[in-house]
Length: 498
Ligand code: GLN
Image (cartoon, rainbow, N blue to C red; front, side):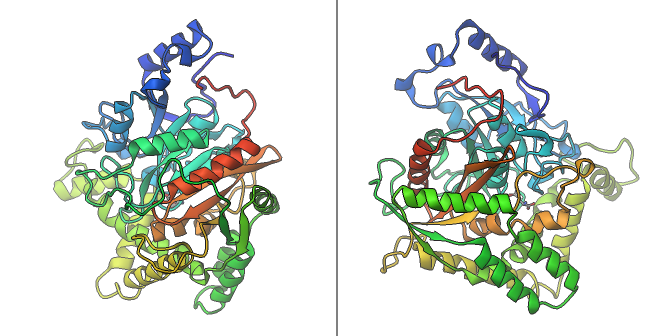
């Protein structure tokens, strides 16, 4: 089978034509690129092609952020994470589609195009890094970069049946990532195997003078390579326990009962996802790990806290898109204010406008206490609950942590369809369903999503959350899992790389 840039999935916003052609020629000349390009002595990434979400800067490439407003923009510089991969002699093939500015769970919020799921092109690829996930799942690249603010790497990874790593906050430089909600987001990795994911993370992590929030792992943190492969204690945060506390919380909230019910309902796992979660538990136990049930009652406030903080930060971060310095401008305007209004009116899609409005609402003068500061307090509570189970980020806690990792669902459903095909999810339900992913962002912790099963031809994923800077532990567990239970691929998949 030949390597082709399939049009079916529409994973790329823009791609590098000559590089893809060169790549195809190489493959055609010999069966596997390893014979020509791969040189193990030069490192695991040498000669590998990769894709980059179109909200991460690569010099000379588009940086559309999935927005009409920035569709013509070409980046004048390269993000640190991409630069480090290029230094390792991996090369960018294209920029991948996303929900506009990373806002969404389907990639259908892109102002540019829809991306289709390689397992079933009538369904979404997940989001917001849907293009990156689809590119890896379809075998266009062995790995891709995405960004995860509230689940945008792990959720599409789970929908497309690939691995998705959201690193510890600050472990990877955000320089060159167009900001959506700066205090929550990390550049993350979508990859075909755990070993690849680890090699990419090893290359891109570390303190960067260009990002003041970036840092190296503390000396006491477990190493990325070579941790003793002993059985681990896995805390299981079941969907049932979360649903119980959610319904209890809903009782005490004022407001529309219908909305509360929808929110609780949207967080419940569909049967196939529940089965996948149970299967993951069985298999991890069979691999020798000890599973214990844990509860984090404050998680029930995760989604409201996440959306309060994320929209507040988004309303500030997106203020720079005014058509003055960059962005598609209207042909004629009355004055500078009119220029800004018309640029934003025509350039931003409805979801982005909604979130800017929400953000300015929660930050408006006199109301910060009620929304934003309250959300920040909830965030601290959630972080503390995780730290009590996993140990703290500074590695100073005296008592030894109760668990090495926490097993959680990723998303309540498998890849959903579009309105026209039925089985879709409303924008509200999509937000309520972020419950399982947004907690890792609120707490700043690493989380690794991986595929466990297929149900009616669609992948189901689960995730392991760990202590800050314990990516090595999570990757070890998933690598061992993968050796016994290899990850599935969609029909027609072929890996052109070792
Ligand atoms: N679904 C989340 C949202 O819409 C994911 C965002 C993200 O991680 N970029 O905010």
